[in-house]
Length: 119
Image 1 (cartoon, helix red, strand yellow):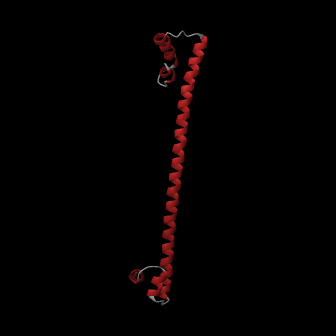
Image 2 (image 1 turned 135 degrees about the vertical axis):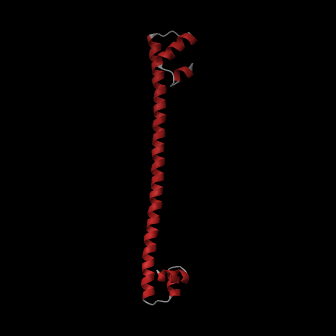
Image 3 (image 1 turned 90 degrees about the horizontal axis):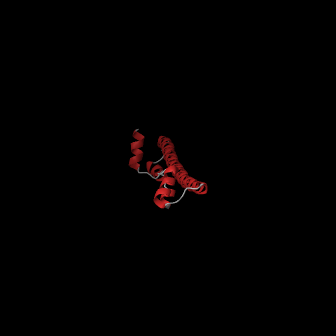
């Protein structure tokens, strides 16, 4: 009987009919109000569940979006830093600073510096 009352797939008039025919419950005015209340309750629970699901979905989407944004920002900053370091290395190479010293300061190999100086 509760399944019939709380089902969101069965309309209220059909619920009243099932209660009368299958459970021999007479539909007085009071009983009709109670059935209506139970129908509204099940609909309310359904809507509340949907709303909670949507909110969780938005929260998860925001979190993923923030993570992606932070990741992209870090990547862009690394690229910017690398470009700036390359410019500095080229200036130091042009100034005649020893390649081994520059490689040590910028934590790279002399071979990488030589390749950079050819560009």
